[in-house]
Length: 99
Image 1 (spheres, helix red, strand yellow):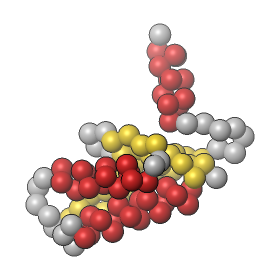
Image 2 (cartoon, rainbow, N blue to C red):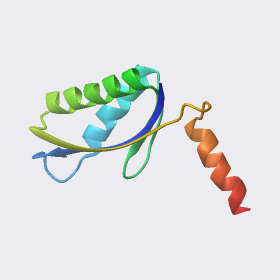
Image 3 (cartoon, rainbow, N blue to C red):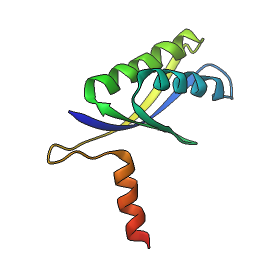
Image 4 (tube, one colour):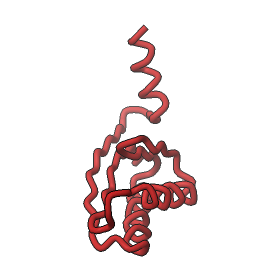
């Protein structure tokens, strides 16, 4: 099943700046081969359910490995079975309606 997942992964106990951890997450996402977008407050990723969630698990493993003793992650998951849909298509649909 195809899934579009928005997630915010917050390392806890690491100080104020989280940018090194976001960079590590971005590397994991690049290595995954999945389509993703890092935004200022969250990350969107799309692909097959198992691959997406395995990648989010890998993000946790890497951030823990980089010294975060705790992590809090919020997820938003969207799936469709009536037709395929991608992140770019959803955004384009909204943009067309703004005009």
